[in-house]
Length: 338
Ligand code: NAD
Ligand code: UFG
Image (cartoon, rainbow, N blue to C red; front, top):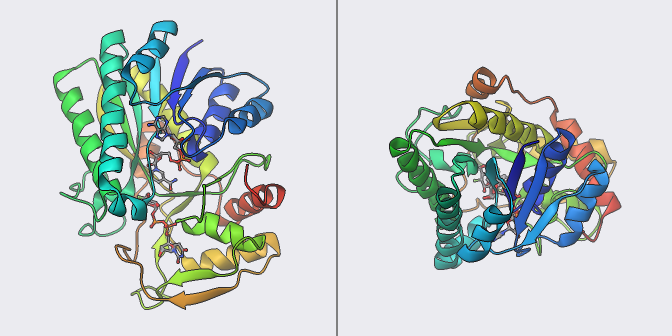
């Protein structure tokens, strides 16, 4: 049985990934420092899957402790989720973001090299396409020289680092998964997006408004060049996204090199359409007010998802209604979070 190290495995996407890995027969090791998650999440993952996880409460910046994980286990591949991800906060604290995200993955890579593990799946982002490429984004478009935030820059830099390592180490195999907008939750309703504090992203914000934890949604701009004036994004059910990770793990086991792959549906949904879909799925009312544009927002982003279909035979299965229904199921069961 193959063993996968999931860094940041107690987080939103990591926790859902652990469920699918366990269900698919992998041994799962989680390394997390719980800076943006709670150990309770791991218990819930184990409950859903009916299997156990080996948990290391470890900061990825602590090289000796990271090495100990490789020393004590025979790790076939790493899925690297650990990182700080709040775009706005990264503009206020760039040093903290560069230190955690860049130095953190460097410690993981050093340990992988030391212990001969050369298979990695990395959580990248559509943000690497920057502002000049037109949607739909295709993997062979040029990556932006710089993003509009230090957070985005860490994704661009890490993609570069991993490509450079693969270029001179022909035994290495890396998939750079460029996520579009993951939302929704596991259909059990016991794990989901559980951000600490006031959410930055629209979906957890809508969830909190739906259960009265926040009074009103602010819609950032209705004067974009889109049919209803609000921004269009490629929302993807977190479970679909996670299934793309299992395909990527399988791919790195059998192939070499460094491959960027979009994980999106290829379909755009506006902010107002998302609000309507959530109201229909939940029966809850989402009061909103139109505000000015948010700095750094792009009018339209969505994926060309053909490469994932070609390489992985993967495509999304769940539509926006299912994303909203599962997101509602999670928040109504966990109005105060996990
Ligand atoms: P999350 O914050 O829920 O999960 C990240 C996990 O990493 C948390 O459990 C946190 O405690 C842990 N972590 C952070 N720093 C660490 C450190 N130094 N050592 C050990 N653990 C550490 O985020 P998520 O939404 O699950 O995102 C996972 C990854 O996917 C991130 O790298 C994020 O940048 C990327 N991503 C997310 C989105 C999105 O919309 N959620 C979009 C594109 C890319
Ligand atoms: N929005 C609102 N109100 C809010 C929050 C967001 O109207 O309270 C709008 C935004 O203006 C944008 C849309 O909802 O038009 C989506 O915004 P999100 O913050 O949910 O998502 P982004 O597309 O801005 O960014 C997300 C992740 C990034 C990642 C990017 C591409 O936050 O980390 O998707 O993957 F880089």
